[in-house]
Image: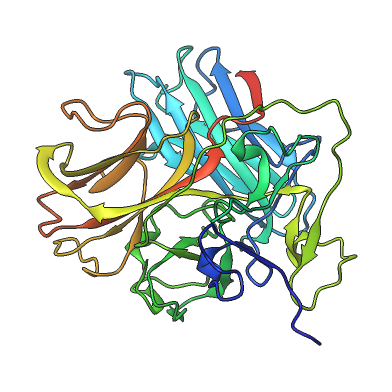
Length: 142
Length: 265
């Protein structure tokens, strides 16, 4: 098969000689791709306003979508959990928490992307706010 | 030199007026291009000649997600993604992006509204050897019905021992009118934590009693660095006793996008 492809160089670089690093796109090196215009969005920011404490000692599923792949896809989720008990703000990528008493996870199964939380020390109050900025990509994540 | 270029918007948006993060690509900045992805339980050669942006995925903890603590086991040199400890197979992504090469893209501050006009045209480009009629998105290099992470900035440089934060600090202005998604990597230099001095590993946001962390639009009290519009990185000067370098990678991907509001319980 002939070596057919497409590349677009960054400003200042000759596309005929540009390395992959000097290209905006290069058909031999695809980026991770997240589906646009989905009824259950594959990229979005989840903003959860907690109205009060949550049942202790059990895992709550706050949010989930069916991603439509039959494998675990690559995903990333930037997390800010603000104003937990004591006024602390927690950050994380795909997960955050406090020891064994607070655990927040954003993850995929072979059918779902979901955000779950476990609280066993009354960390979550009516002042707590959760933001999860996520992408679910088509590429394999496992 | 004349200002030539190409850009492609997401479906439903006017490519001539749209804000930068709603473009599928623009020739003014690179997409985050995958050099290699696979699973491995040991060191992987990449031979790129520079330490690349990389991500290690979690397996059982947050499946498919970013292992923000991967530096405990994995780090990169200019030739290898090194597994220094641990067992078990992990999914890795190595990208064609040099962590030591500074880059800053322009910002396009256009509209962020979808147009009523039917702009639902598109472009798709397969990987070598793949069928253009494939329904598997993994077969495509570019597909205009998808969104891909785009690089706004790479800032590489040494940390400074200011005595504030955890002791060592570095901060940058990202110059976007939205809060972006950010990844940070550190070359530890001399340290007492057992990290290789010269290989780069991922830095987590502040979680528990960390020896290094980064913040976006925020900073710990007592420092004049950081705050709105910045990425702030700090490291423990009692553990990192040399001069660490950090690489801050800012993506043209807003933290807040297509916001889904809900209340719970």
